[in-house]
Image 1 (cartoon, one colour):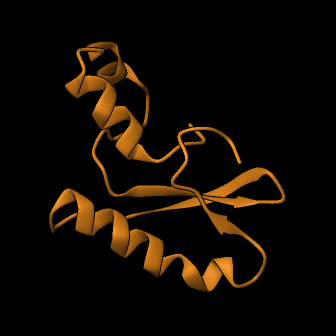
Image 2 (image 1 turned 90 degrees about the horizontal axis):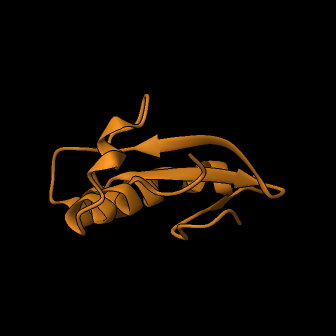
Length: 79
């Protein structure tokens, strides 16, 4: 879906329950897309701590991939 899973969690908290129906999506903070040359090429998801810590851990875990030219995306829009 080209955006961090945090975006979907926020939508649901704000009353947009339709986000619960997204196929193959987990609307909980902790997932971040891997963007390479403007295209999503993968993602890292973490669960088990607080939502904020999960997202921070996902960002840190993806750093090895990012060092090869990709960038993590906290933005709700495509980078």
